[in-house]
Length: 148
Image 1 (spheres, helix red, strand yellow):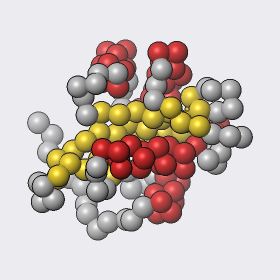
Image 2 (cartoon, helix red, strand yellow; image 1 turned 60 degrees about the vertical axis):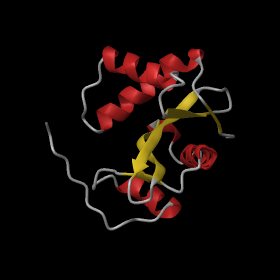
Image 3 (cartoon, one colour; image 1 turned 135 degrees about the vertical axis):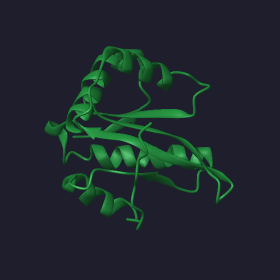
């Protein structure tokens, strides 16, 4: 299978929604039509420093997604990238989709002038972490969250 990547086109919306619902289900986060509408709008808003890339199969069907954005790094005095969401349809894992997505993310990051892209994942996301250990450096930072 030959995997390509693309920014989402209007005709990708239904497939993107299916993938994003799968991602939310994996992380046990409720997904609503309002959230899907908002995120789709961010993806297509040129004023938002928010990006999406889709992994497409041979037929051009989206089989994976990545959402990432610009984030200030005060200690560096520059913007860096932050990968919020990465998901490949379980039926297409091992197809090379995740590598294609990381390549597209890195390409956009270089285009934006970011020196790095960071992300977090669930501790027990063993399959994902195996990929991340292969493509990136595992840092020694722990993540905390202050709920408001």
